[in-house]
Length: 392
Image 1: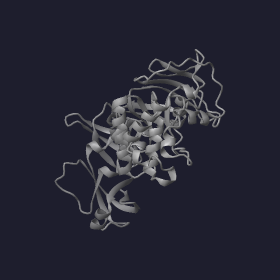
Image 2 (image 1 turned 90 degrees about the horizontal axis):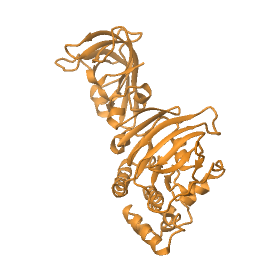
Image 3 (image 1 turned 135 degrees about the vertical axis):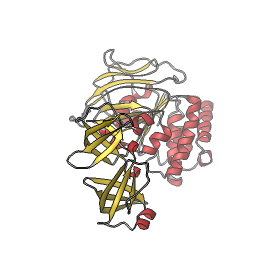
Image 4 (image 1 turned 90 degrees about the vertical axis):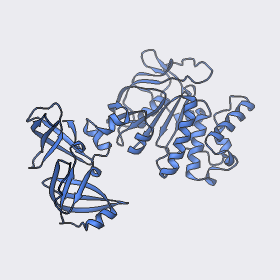
């Protein structure tokens, strides 16, 4: 989003503590460092308290609704003034409560693409993209607009209006408008959520190519686990205004150590469990799911017999059989009965009672081939390393 429109959106934000001078010139190619504490006036019961850094490239902000992702973006953009802390991109300080620095929105050089895009319906594509460039010469403005229209494959649409182009094309216009101002950081608040996966992938590929040349930090809010793995050079997970974990996608999502992260990462089955035995010779241990007689062989961790852990298992990592399976490498085979079936698009979620209720995901074809129905006797197959262990 152009700085001018960001300034319009800032509305009644708090007056700046002090105005620090912003040196002209190209955006600094360096990372973001932020330490922010704030309690937004719109929700006094919520507070944001984070301390993190984001290098150039994609940093994913991941978390449930209400976790504080958009609040954090708004603090970086200057739409919310934090109660305390600092925000800086390289040596360029946006906010420092102690030094009473609070750069106005228009001086921060932040690109921001909102969920609703906020394109001007009466402007052409070219006019929308050029909106934030009123302070530069006509020739430079023309050059920048032409360059970014080409980069995002929308040059042929230059004379059309937003209502005359597709949803994916409107997303490209919003991105181009944010980047034509040469921002030092880009904030993306789920702007691609409504698009189909192929369209989204093509847009993100073009954004990735653009950033290989410009190397600025990009904070990208998403609820999509696929996007976390496809895009993120690092992931920050927020929960109730706190950063609960930070790392690479595989570190954070592949083997989560917090229940909040496990839920967000798509682990549908999460249970308390008690360590019953340790098998150091084979690198496993036996854990009994709380308030049941169901025991699972899990990877070995540093936990004493009798200690309480949580076990997380993805529904897609459990196999179903309608006859007792034999000759398997999987260590966990649990008898049970189908308690219910729910179709979710092309996936079927089966609820199976095996002493505890486990959710299992399978295809429509698998459901039909197995002739699954409520009451059908089945066996669940769970590999040892599909059982992810977390501290309570």
